[in-house]
Amino acid sequence: MPDGCQGVGQSALGASALDRPSTRASAVVEFARESDVDLSAAGVDVVMSTGRTTLNLALSVDGFIATADGGVSWLEAIDDASDDPDALDSFRAFFDGVDCLVMGSRTYEKILDHAEWPYGQKPTYVTTSRALSPATDAVEFYDGDVAELVRDLERRYRHLWLVGGGELARTFLRQDLLDELWLTVVPTVLGSGIPLFDDSLERRDLTLQEAIPYASGTVELRYAVDAN
Ligand SMILES: NC(=O)c1ccc[n+]([C@@H]2O[C@H](COP(=O)([O-])OP(=O)(O)OC[C@H]3O[C@@H](n4cnc5c(N)ncnc54)[C@H](OP(=O)(O)O)[C@@H]3O)[C@@H](O)[C@H]2O)c1
Image (cartoon, rainbow, N blue to C red; front, side, top):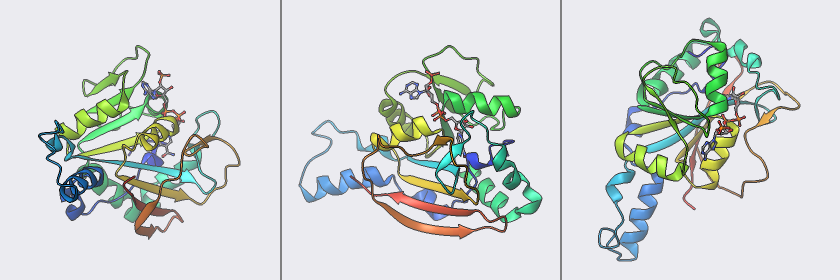
């Protein structure tokens, strides 16, 4: 587990969920069926969207994912596996189920500040306009249209984990690129910091799929993002 970044996502994923197609893809296909539209004739590549994307991170009760300077030491209490084996199992199951990671450059740099690269050889795409050094040969950098990146990755991978941070997560939400939002609420009020949500977002309705309380006092909320 990434040091100081447990909140960077601890959750479990049932095998049945892995078999589900992207909810966004389903909505498009359903709409096309109801409207009698031939998607392939319309040039829409339905096969490309079989993957799905989950934002999975931890946030304070007041909605922050890090202190203003990017600090995540307030997550360390829940990083200790011995305190919360169920949460650890849950995160491991989630991590085993994802086959590609996406993160913003500030999250990437913060992870490297704290620890050696914690994600092994899972393919990881870091969005940045800068020339950064890859932590491993599994890390690639991307500067461009995030929606295009996600479309491409969902064609090649079954389950993407959007690790964070806030800026990239909001871009995903604004551009309707998320199928699921898994939030581990940490019983801490930070008062200020780097927010997950801000007023650049419009209303999105979510469907609660599961709420799992853990011994350490965290609660994992698993939401499906309803189709727009
Ligand atoms: N609590 C948790 O579970 C959790 C999870 C993840 C992260 N975090 C924390 O969140 C903080 C980082 O969040 P953040 O909101 O400040 O930043 P972020 O979303 O991690 O990264 C933002 C950066 O991503 C790049 N980027 C974003 N959109 C892009 C696009 N369309 N094209 C190209 N590059 C793009 C830009 O990089 P350049 O400036 O390099 O161009 C931008 O500055 C860290 O402190 C991290 O520890 C916490």
